[in-house]
Structure formats: structure tokens, C-alpha cells
Length: 140
Image (cartoon, rainbow, N blue to C red; front, side):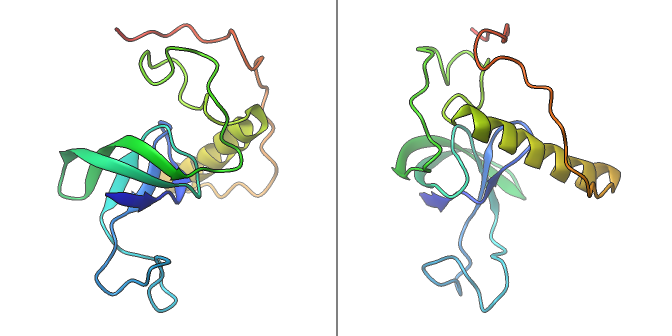
């Protein structure tokens, strides 16, 4: 299925929505946001158009695996680690480092608002680690 990635959410997956029957090609419905079923796709960036296939379907959402990036983000870079997407240590290695920090700010702000009902008005200051060599999680 072809999907347009709206944003990244907590955990690092991209959020897309299946189209409603009344949607236009651009994903717009008469001034309202699309109301299709949520699809979560890992290793994507906001604004990308991707090809993915479903791996799990629940009542309210679908988890999908990325097959191909059809229209890449300008912030997409080639991951340096040969184990990217396999070990589970780095979810954002396909984004340049300044964009990784912006993604983390956006996810934190949205999570605070959604779960704790805190609308943070000020700037969120991050204390970033070095771009490389700080992760120690491995999945085998």
C-alpha cells in the first residue's frame, strides 16, 4: 500500500492514514483532516511517500513494514550503521542529526499534551548526546 507519512510518534514509527473513499489524491477531504485508519510504519520521516505492507491489523490501527521510500524527505540520509533496522538500537539514524533532535522535541511536546494535558508553550531544551557511539541496546 502507498502511504503519506504525516509525522513521527512516540517509539519512532511514522503515522499515516488509510484514505477515506471521499478523499482527493492529495489526502484532503473538503477542509477536514483524513479520518482513515491509522497505519504505523517504522524507519520513515514526515512528508515521505512510501510503499509498505501490513504485518499486523487491529481494530483501530495497522502496523506495516517499510518496503520502499517512493519520495524521500530532504532530511533523509544514508544510515552509517550496517545493522540499522535490525538491532533496535537506533530509530532515527536515517535522519540527519539536527532533524533527529527536532523530531524528539516534537514527540515530547505532543506526548506531554496528549497524555498529561500539558501544552508546553516554551522552547524545549534538549541536552543531546554525541551523534554516534552512545547507544547500547541490541536485539538479536
